[in-house]
Image 1 (cartoon, one colour):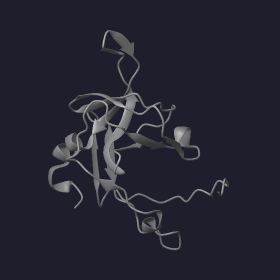
Image 2: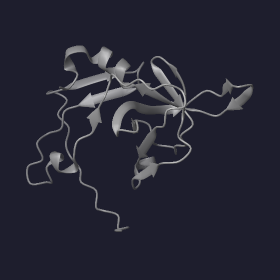
Image 3: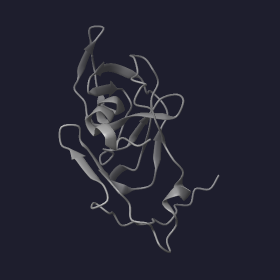
Image 4: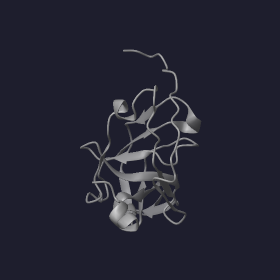
Length: 150
């Protein structure tokens, strides 16, 4: 496997074309300016968004993060949904500082939430459980209305 870290590619944003933000749901969507002579944005691939796949407790989730702007890290183990409390999803998946906005995937590699913050300590089966918190895509889709992609 290739363990080399690729050079970063920077893109300019075009908020005049599209800009939507929500403090309550902790997301921002901004259009990307066509890259000109840089690598096309499409060359990175596309994430499949599924705002209709709110998970249930014990379902498995995976987070791909770039903590503190560093190299990509994938959290594959100990990743269980602990509770869904709209608009939030609480899970046991461990994340690192600076990972807010990372996609939360279900087992079919569909994005179902965006990582948001450290979650509350939950009381589950009489024991305290550390959690992390994501914002459900179903809540973001509802907030975006006609701006939702697709």
